[in-house]
Image 1: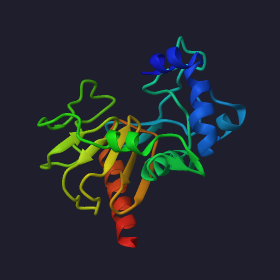
Image 2: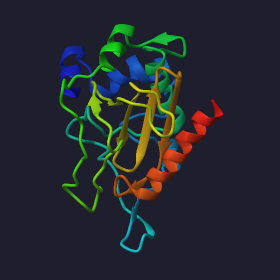
Image 3: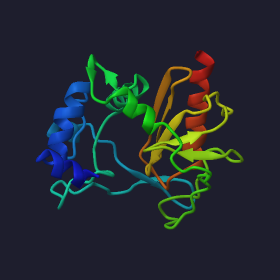
Image 4: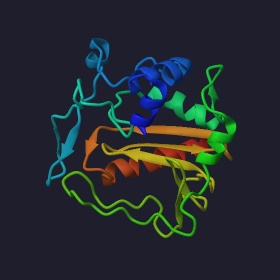
Length: 211
């Protein structure tokens, strides 16, 4: 998808995103390449060992990659990512700027796998991820970029909400019904770490209790 954007725009993916997404939304700490100010604020990735203890795990995306990846590789912050999820919550508009049409966001949020269900994600590389099931026992669907829950979750998330995650136990959700979005970021491996998941779910439950 990133290469398609580059072919259609005539720009490198990062330049296109900066002009059409990051700058309009005020995402000033988001980029493929780490600036000196970003590096000074960079969180280390940690890996949990067999005894449960955390240790720093050296990890960094190449700063001069062969191509900028449409599926990953950006560095960002929680406030920046909240601007992105708020844009989706507000149907394509945030910070006074429209970056997507409302119809596009609506299409992204629909079930695009028909009668199929998103089932438990198995661990091909157990050192980097545990098996992951976000809503055990619940039929789960997939939109264009989002996991969709079909029933209300124990934490209070409305049916039809949108969510997904990153490998180092980073999570977001967007609830159009309750008009709320949240971001939870750690830098811990393996993915679906039980302690990180428990804290994320407690955080989400607290948000809905506050509503």
